Image 1: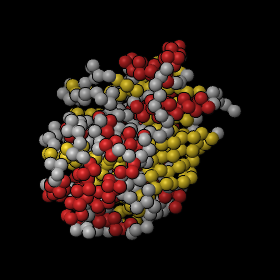
Image 2: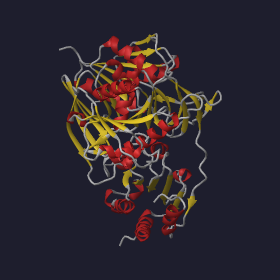
Image 3: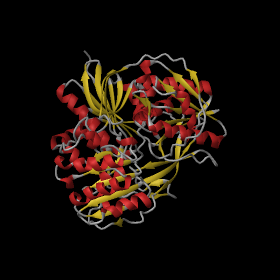
Image 4: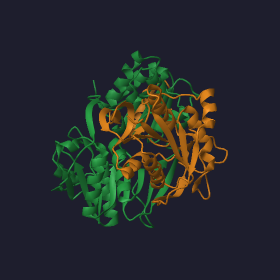
Length: 320
Length: 250
C-alpha cells in the first residue's frame, strides 16, 4: 500500500505544481499510514534524490529521453503498471496541462474513481471524500471515491509546498515507449512566470485603452514578481496574446493575489479568477461588478493609481 | 479513400450566468427554471471545428453524441443546427465521468471514428476528464487542451496549451482531442441549419452496463465575501501596505 505521486517536469525542471503534489501526497500517506513514492518519466537536470525533502522515500524513474515529451497513452500505461506493481492505492497528479492528459487515462485504465481539481486532503474518517471546485468556482462539491484504488488531480496553488529533510532512493523503472505523438515545436514566453504557476497575477482590461499602455502593467508585475494576464476583449482585440487571457474561455487561475486593472468583472471573467485568494480591483467605475467579488479596491483612474502602486512596491522592497 | 468520420461529444450545462443552488439536502443541482446550453467548449470549439473541416471537405461525416435523459434533446437539436449529419443520445443520466466515458466509448466503437472531439471541460463539473477516459477506453492517443487543429490525411497537427506557451504535436489517427479557445470561433446557428436539424436523425440508444466510481456527497456554496475594503484613489501606498501587512500576499 502506498501513495504514488506523478512528478511532472518540462525543460529539465520539476514544475512547482509537482512540489505541491509531492507535499500533498506525503501528507496523505501520513494520514493513511502508508509510504509516499514518486514516479517520474523522462529526465531532469536537478538531483532527483533531493526531492526526498518533500516527503517521498522512493522515486520510480523511467529515464528514457523520449519520455521528456508527453504522450498521454504511453504515460498512462507506464504509470498504471507501476501503480499495480508497487501496490499503490492512491495516485496523485497535478491538475495541470499534463496531469489533465494523464490522470483520467490512468483512472480509466485502473478503473479507479477520479476527483480532478481537488482542493484539499481527503476526509478519510468515513470513506474517502475529496473537496473540489465545481460550476467554475461558484460552488464546491465533496466527492466520495468509491473504488479500492483512487486517483486525485490536485489543483495548482491549492496546497502549500512543505519542505523538510530527506533523500529519496531512485528506483529505475523499465518501460518500453512507442509514442504515437511527435512533438513538432514548442513556443514558450521566456523569462516569465507561467500564469498557472504564478502566485501573483497583474491583469489588465479594456479600461487601459490600448496595448501601448501595458508598460505600467508589466512594470507592476515585474516589481511584484508576478505574471501578467488580460481579459477576453483585450485578447480578442490582439492587444495582448491569447495565452494571457484568463476567464471562462481562457485560462482558469488561482493565485494568492489577483490584481485586476480596468476590468469590469463580467461573470465569464470571474469564472476564471474567482478562486484567487485575494482579489484587488482598480477601476474608475464604482459600479463595476468586480468590486463585489474583490477584497480590496480603489475607485480611481488606473493611469494615476498604478504608477503610485509601483512606487509603493519599490519603496517597500527597497528597489531603486 | 474512405470518408473521414468525426464524433463530437456534446454535454448539456447550465448557462454561464445561471444562479447556482442545490436541492435534496445539497446533493443535487437545482436545475428547475435554469437556462440550459450546450457546454461552450463543446459547441464553440469542437463542434465548430468539425463543421469547418466538413466545409473544406464535404465527404467528412460528423456524428454527435450525448449522454442524457429526454430533457437533453433540445440541446442536441441545437447542436445539430450548427452542424452534424446524425446524432446519438444515450438515454441515461450522466452519473459520473467514468460512466459517461464508458457510454461514449460504446458509441465510438460502434461508429468507427477517425477523430473524436470533446470540449476541454464542462463548465459545471470542471472535470476535464471525459476525453482522457474515452481515449483510454478506446486505446487511442489523446491530445488535451488543443488551441489549433489541422488534418493532414492520416495524421493531425494539434497545438496544445502548455504552461506559459504552446506545443505543436503530430498525432496519428484515430485520436481523441479536447478543444478550447483558438481551435475555432463561436457560430450562431442560421435558419437553414435550424430547419435542417429537424430532419436529421437523432437516435436514442440504451446505455450499456457501466459502473459509477464516484458520487457527490454534498455541494456547498462559498461563504459570502466580507465586502471590498476601499482605499482612497490618492493613496495607493495604503493599498500596498494592506496587501503586505494585512493580507500578507507579498
